[in-house]
Amino acid sequence: MAKFLLFIAVLAVIYVLVRASNRRTKPPPEARMPEAMAQCAHCGVHFPGAESVSDGERDYCCEDHRRLGARS
Image (cartoon, rainbow, N blue to C red; front, side, top):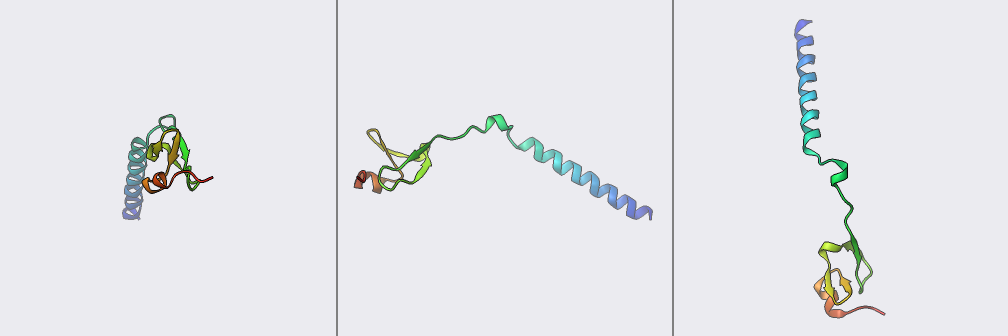
């Protein structure tokens, strides 16, 4: 019976240590800012603004759509 209780105690300690280490690695919620989105002028797909290919005031999702231009 003592071996079983020792085994449960060791598992509990491991569980607490793993949970504590996971809390330290996640950034705080206020550090995760929403990213600005853009819409492709050719196909209309929304995507992160940091990945956009710009041509003047228009944003495109890829170089091919920039070459094809805006859809009317």
